[in-house]
Length: 208
Picture 1: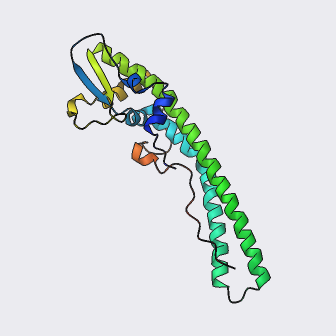
Picture 2: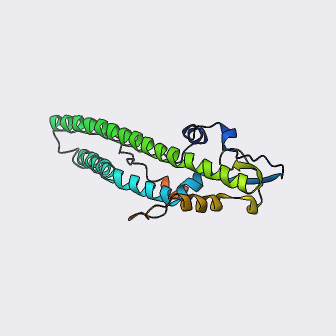
């Protein structure tokens, strides 16, 4: 499962419909800005630390998934390499063992992915709610009529100078300082796609 949060999911956790992400001011200046709120969340100090904490939290479970995959591969290798010498009873025993380990692996992977997704979504909700307030405050103070979530609706062209993402991240970090994460690099949207606990696809079960 990818860690990238879908548009609908992110809007749900922010407690808003699409219009709720549009920061409006009472002025009529016509100034418009865009913010990639998912990128902004993952670029904040709090977002980076939260993702690093999640990676550390789920590292043991990811290691367990890897170990289970290795056990499955070992049985597959034995069945394939010793097919000519194994008795029928031994082949049946190994195949039963293989089936059971594959079932356990499936449960382990699904449980880890579900728990990771729940923790990740809570992180997006917590930071996103505070970030929306930062965006609204910035828009009102700087006479913006509209600030659009560029990752929420299609935008076919936007001048670079109206992208407020970096400014919002700086304002958020100033208002919500955190200690730098002790391990792990910056959590960018592309980098975090690989952090969900997942198993490599096990080899197909050989026929008895």
